[in-house]
Length: 248
Image (cartoon, rainbow, N blue to C red):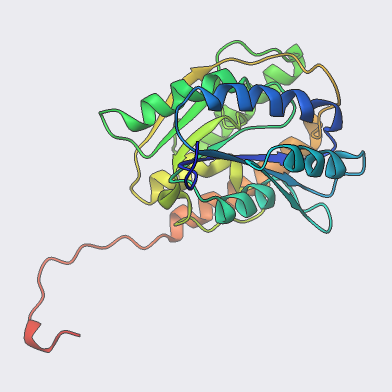
């Protein structure tokens, strides 16, 4: 459809060359059915396997796909942030490039985001995980620890399939590793966040970029940063103000 995109899909890419063409085809088929202008921003995070050239090929074949390239590997949060600030849509959807998130879930996320009761973000939780038992248990423990220390209630912080109102996202300052805590950061700013079960598929090609050990250590450090932010957040209420004639 013509006109500026109403919907932007942001996809960080790091060494996923075998998954990119099938992902682009699935996304185009799903988004075309929405009946609104859309774009997909593929952000290459310093890949070394040919992913950079592949997203250029995809963008050349279909102008609704945009290829963004980092000079070096900067991490998933940086890739999301770059996409957020270059997205033109009023609604932004995020997902992984590994084909484990199902593009067919996007219409359901949008329906919940856009229909009453109003919310500002809808985050997916993987109802039936298609990972190894070890990864599932480590994820469950990580979620429990994060929720306990942050005071939040997010079932699956590791699920990248989410939908946001773009203006809400752009009001959040992100730091390394903070993409896992977007629901918590949005709630801190007073936005309404809801959760929805989404599908999860086994990985068909490529390999995970996180091991259990580095995910746990990095996640715990990031959690401490979020906890510090919550404790230092300004929280005041003005009950009376005089001299309004002199107010600037």
